[in-house]
Image (cartoon, rainbow, N blue to C red; front, side, top):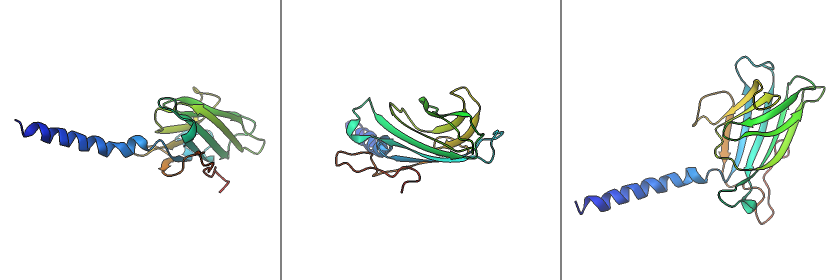
Length: 165
């Protein structure tokens, strides 16, 4: 019994260390690629975006995030919202006469980033596009975390926003 307890402690300690990178993955540049959802009113629509952790302004549990999105192929002159399932609406815009649109926002708190959708109107509107972290759920689009890009850090460096590389 005396040998088993230290062995169990070591196993659980190593298991906890293995989870650390997953916990820290929110401190990164999350690239989102949106794809149409089944039955979308705008099947030709597309979009990209980033959701970045702001290292210098965040103190756990109050994390600060910036977001930037660009869309095309949308219905003209229509109100849209970007909605993250764990948080709700994070930014809104009205599409142009040519069906393009963009929005940027800074917000506090993002419990997890598994699914983001572009919805007509607000939180309850019909989904047009979706980005999905495939490790969390299956679905259209993609969310990929790229480590090492923390915007802005105390040295003043920033990550590239979509279309501004």
